[in-house]
Amino acid sequence: MLQRGGSKDYDCIVIGGGVRKPDPNLALFERVINTVHKHASGAAITFNPRPNDSVEAVARAPPKG
Image 1 (cartoon, rainbow, N blue to C red):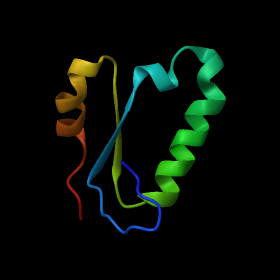
Image 2: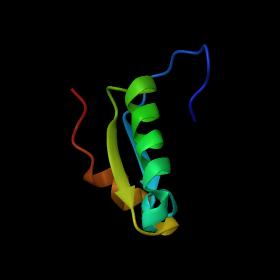
Image 3: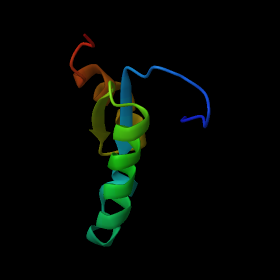
């Protein structure tokens, strides 16, 4: 979770299929990616097709550093 005014480091951000699919969500998806980039630029970004695939998505993230 992003916190305004706070400073946190995130290793990985998982963005779910509900944000990037269906196609009409493209503008929302772009806003999410740009917000993550702005507030957690050092974090890997991964995607999961289903909520129960989040752990696997994080495991695919490249090592930080």
